[in-house]
Image (cartoon, rainbow, N blue to C red; front, side, top):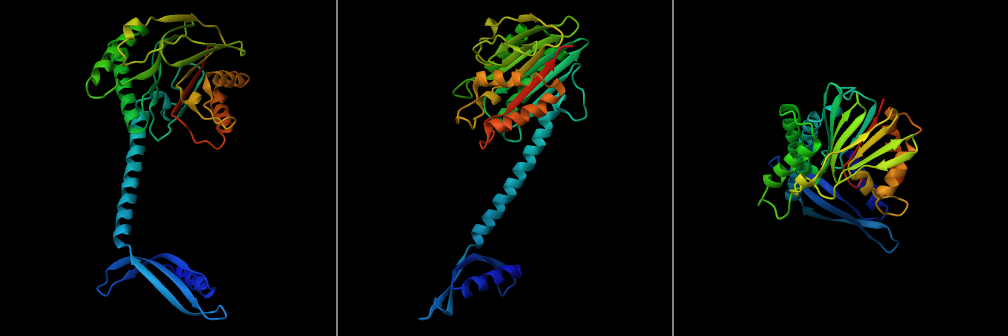
Length: 323
């Protein structure tokens, strides 16, 4: 035990106060044991200590259990950080080895709430077309991260290997796959909210199918429009009801693709979630700033808005500028 502990003990009891702390002792056979010691003075008629009384409780078993728990926590954190590297590895735009993963001005804000995330951003570029997917799966942590991996791998199979770029067909395929994947295993469907889009930079057109995802178009830095969204999620077996939408884009247009993490964040102003209206206002506040600087500004504004509230949900925001 450090000498400072016993120095503190004597200073405390000589001053007439009670001291309590954990002490590691050695048995005669050389093994160690832990006690919770409570030491206090008995005082004479003048209030001066004349004797000290110590009560000790053996806490060796509790300390051993505490050490096991600490080791489990360290192992869990180590595994979660390894899982985060694996998850980021499946999202090329987030890899530090690819400083310019997208062929147009952009920023990507990906903020997991629990080291690994139930929100994801996946893309694939072929010539002047870029497939974009921003999603938010049900659940957080390990469960949410596992679902993102399933979703991204299915996208990779359909887009890169099967060559399907029509978003409504992709939506139907993925929705059917997810709705049958865990059938009977859970009491409720496993669902994912997601925006699927194909950005053709040559023609300046965006084709998309949106299942409860949040997507905005900002034009002239002052007009904001929320893109069409279907009121159902992937996994609800309604994908065949979805149609592909297409919009023409103009130079300097900005697209913002989000999960609901920002809207769910509690605000320090009224202790309520920010909501869609506040998000639209926040995006308009970013417009005087160049797109590549908006990530830092958005994080700063988010920190101010939430005040003392912790992060409420996983967050992903993708900002894109049309050239």
